[in-house]
Amino acid sequence: MPVEMLLPRRRPTPLVPPWPYRPRPLPDELLSSYLCRLALGMDLKPISFLNTVFGSAKNLLAQDLDNYVPPRIVQRIAHGVQRDPGVIVGCTLQDLTGTLFTRHNPRGRNPWLLPTTVDNNVRRRTGLQFCPACLTSDPAPYFRRHWRLAFVTSCTRHGTLLRDRCPHCQAPVHQHETVLPTHCSKCERTLCEASPTLARHDHLEWQGALEAGIERGWITLGDDHVRSHIVFAIVRQVAALLINGRLAPALREATARDWGGDPRPYEKPTARQPFEYLEVGERHRLFDMVERLMRGWPYRFVHSCLEAGMHRSHAIKDMPNPPFAFEAVLRTYMDATPYYATEPEVAAAANWLRRTKGKATYRDLRSICGESRAAIYRNMDYERRQAVPSRWRVEAMAELETQG
Ligand SMILES: [Zn+2]
Ligand SMILES: [Zn+2]
Image 1 (tube, rainbow, N blue to C red):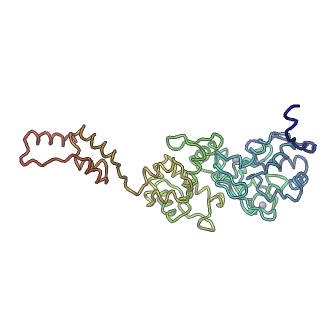
Image 2 (image 1 turned 90 degrees about the vertical axis):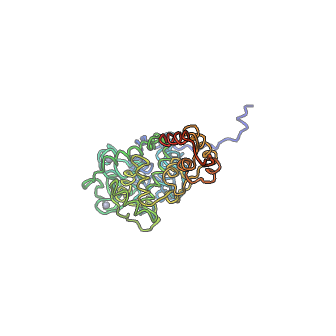
Image 3 (image 1 turned 30 degrees about the vertical axis):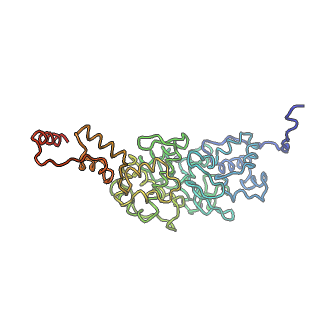
């Protein structure tokens, strides 16, 4: 008898036919956008479609399905559209684990992800941004996954700022409630009207490099290629230093004075609120400053921090596991505690002085090794002062002095 016969069998899934309309997800399409397109393609309202498939008790629209979608629901959608479950998970933000962040919280807040708090099916927060020009030019308008990320404040394709609400009634975007993704669910007017605001070229380039880093897994930081989640952790900390904490105003002033940008405080209700809660215009202003400060990493950043009176201990505050790439910059340039050379370092310096200058004097050792006085006394050369030094010695010492 084959061994497989003895193993527990999977219960066969009930035979449900695939859905009649099953397009593939568009490039970088959000799961919520995909579900709405599926529903509209089958002439159903998104809510009726989801209730028919998953039952009304679940109220899937009250959850942020783009942030996290349970495996059972992934399986059902994958079966409905006859595609690999990986394709469905690829439409969610949890799929960015490993490139944007290292750990994903399925039920709560995540760094970089814009919140879309939903109360009684009403979307309170403006966590879904959009580019009017992209929506207008799409053959089938859809919402992109990267429009849910906090550092994405402009469209690198059109060079304009994103929007996060209806230009007419200021309501947040609520895709499930509308028949056309290009129209407001509340006032039913088009989301794509009104004149766009242009973003700076340097800013677009910077944002584009971060977006590419999510796809590629690494980003150029200074002279190094660094894993993207590490760069995102550093960018997030630099942004946090500009917005939160007692030295934030001084850092903004120093940055604006030397590298440009707008140093005004940000409009937010509480002092410690993370920048993911800022509306798109304010976030753009913040990341405009982050871009200016991080250009030529790390020299502008170090300069402005020191100008603002910020040292390592402050710059690393509230960072749970500071990445080495960040810690190394802070240790090298921003440590307020003086460096004490170790005993072997002082001994090596003394040997080098003997080879090059003939002897290791206190003064020379001090200029190389700094404040490690005890070690200097142990390693320097002591000489008995001669009552009448020979002429040869005086000349030799003078020659050594001039060479030094
Ligand atoms: Zn666009
Ligand atoms: Zn509206």
